[in-house]
Length: 448
Image (cartoon, rainbow, N blue to C red; front, side):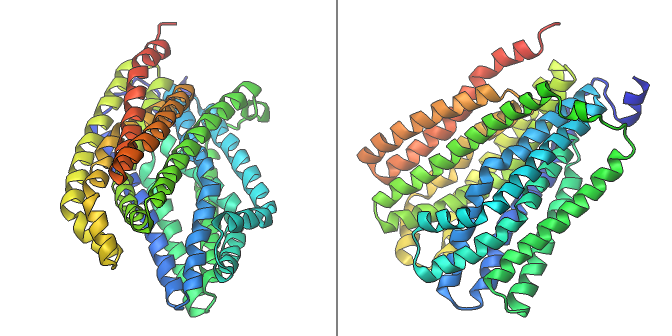
């Protein structure tokens, strides 16, 4: 017990506004920097004045994101498991949870590298782009996939730091990686004239360097802690628990991605103008959602830590405080987007007809942030607490309801119907988890 207290505070803790903000603000800043990379890469490739290169970059980035999105569990799942070990004061399990995630990340990443030619071919077939665009996309995907092991290990490293509540350190690593990415992309893409290959290699270099930096920090910390026996790290029960949690998170991510793809597809059925307007508005919606991701990270860490510490009061307070902050910020963000949305739309597209169409549906996109805030926060609480089965089941029910609403309301009300279906999906995800939570809390904090 003395050893446990020496390394970190495992006593009962009280969740404060400061604890919430200390995690939420750095992570919100880290998440907001991510879209900047896409803008920089586009600007670098755009200097060559070749439309095919820009198309290859855009389609290649989509394929790469689709391949990596299911592996978001390496970040969120690791956060929840490390946070629970942190709450219990279990040093060995805290380290073991990271090494399990590291082994999954490294293995999955190497498999992606080996399958990169097949992934590139499938991506080109799915995108069905013109030959010059397909050629540029092929170059981008094959180079980017070299960094897959590093990209996935970075997810696990960030998950560990978040699980320990070290959001500022996570922010520094993200800023370091993104800064290196921008610098390499400019030098390799423009100054050395490598174009789209330079942008791809810039990302590879930055992710590899970020892994080296992150692992250096972790190994330095782990050296001060007791060694973890291999049989503890790869304990069958713990591995099964991790696989179940990660599998449920993966299903949730795939359903969410599927919902957005279906939304875009149904918009395309209403014509190119509606498709373009909806694409612009989804960027507006995602920009608002980035700010809320910081509070989701806080909810994950604090809820997981409270469950690990068997502290019901801390859990309830973590849920209340993160919900209050997220709701307040989502309301402010929605109003801000509603008031300034016209200027945002004008900045994203010069086409007058697309601008006019997007402005018509702007209120739907602006207030989608408020409709989605409960889903974001509740999802984070359930991941942190490792109540993944309920999260998976409510997501699948919500997805089924979304599909029904999308086709029925879309047929009756056109694009207004599609956007209303998206709001139904977002609201149903949050409300269903909120209804399930009291039962899960009673079970998790039952007297033993």
